[in-house]
Length: 198
Image (cartoon, rainbow, N blue to C red; front, side, top):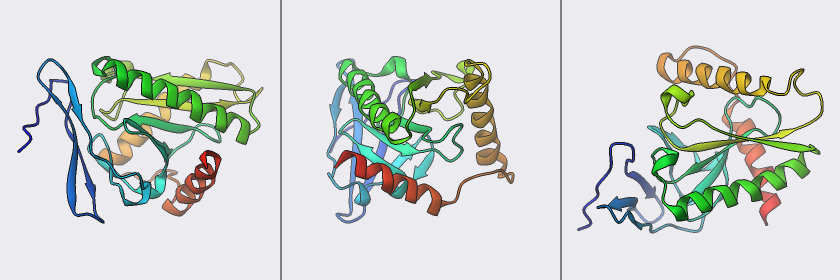
């Protein structure tokens, strides 16, 4: 039996592969931060967790052994997606391999989305901890394709991200009615993005 440990900031993210009926885990044990990951290569048979929330595999369009990209419930601009580590922790707690993977994946995904949306730039944003504005306790990077004039003042995008995060937190905590996209809309967008990586 595998003994799973977590630090104060890192938590075990169990992944269930329903087609095989097995529980898979990403774990860190002791100070060596060894990682155990047994994962299927088919995204449609995976379960993904984003903090305490289960993410439908239809929302995920790209996945590596250590990270996954998903469409956003409330995008700030067209193409605004989230890139998350499979391990549920803070950015500062990632190993060198996890850090390298998430940023190399961000580069790859960002490049494809910039081209797909005919954008000219990219914004990569990360909020690491509640005082930094992180509302879902799970390391993730916002990737936003940018076009000239999408915001009057360029840095307003960070205020917009903060506002969407606050709205999402209210939705998840209080179930208030907001302008969420439907699962069908998000699944269609993810399906279009999956084609970029074939």
